Each structure stands twice: as structure tokens, then as C-alpha cells.
Amino acid sequence: MKRLCTTLAFTTVVICGAAQAQTAPEQSMDKPWDYIYDNPGKTPHDDDQSEHGERLQARWNSCSDMVLKTNMVAKTIAGVKDNPDDYYVTAEQNRKQLDQFFPTNTGTYQDTINAKILALGDEHWKMARGDADSAPELSQMAWDWCTNQDAENFVGL
Image (tube, rainbow, N blue to C red; front, side, top):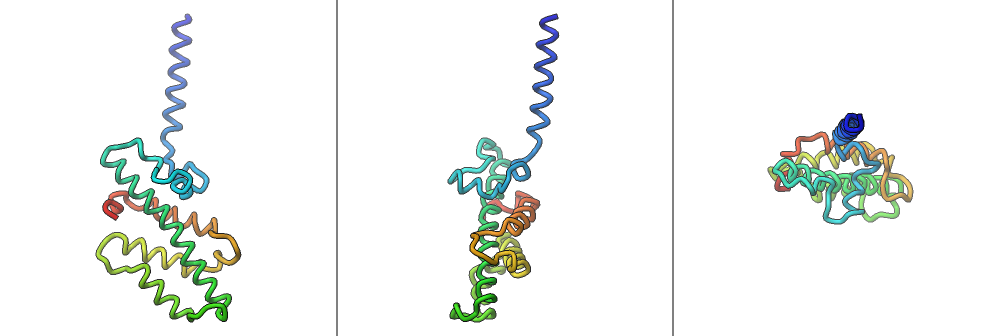
């Protein structure tokens, strides 16, 4: 009887553990994009040294970077639009500078990422108003879009 109880307990732990393991880090963390800043040089996928794991690591790094850059673009646009007298550039000049900083014609998947950074920042610049370094809703939009892209796209970026 004791052996049966031990087997049942072990089976329950294995089943529960397997159910928990199915949630990807991209969806299970609060502000997952901060992981890379709290753990420099690491991603939650570092233990997976397979080819797939390396793709997930590359995507995680790119997506974390995208969140930061999207907020930067939105913050820049908000600053110029809300306080034009405080800047030495017009909104049009600012946009041209952003287009140069985030090129969309390099022939890599980074073009797609840069286009999305610019689009999200341009569309949601009002979220970036204020003193905060980032807008949580905008960060989540960038993260969700990026982590839903095929991890293969991020290899070599």
C-alpha cells in the first residue's frame, strides 16, 4: 500500500510539473522584457542549447531591445509634439531622424522590426507622455507582437 501511495504522489507531481512547464516564459512573466536587464547577458532560454533554444534566445534578446526602442521612439515623438519650443527639430525633422536611426531597407528581418517600432511609436506616442521611462501598455504591445513572430526570423540579428 505504501508503494502505491508513493507512486500516486510521484505521478501527481509529474503531471502537475508538466502542466506548469508548458507556459512559455514570454507569457508567464510580468514585464518579461525586463528579464534581460535584471539578468544581464541571460535569457530564460539559456539552458536550452539546441538550435531551437538558440533561436528563442535570439528572439528574446531582440524583443527586449524592441520594447526599449519602441518606448524611446514614442517618448521622442511625444516630446517634440507636446513641447516643440524645447527642441531644435520639427516633428518632420524628428521623423526623418527616426527613419535614419531605424532603417527599413537593410534586407534583413530587422527591417520588419524597425518598421513595427516606428509604427507603434508613431501610433501610440500619447502613451509615452509623462516622466516615466516606459509606457506599460506600449511595452506590452511591442512584446506581444515581437514574441509572436517566428523565432527563426531572429537568427543573426
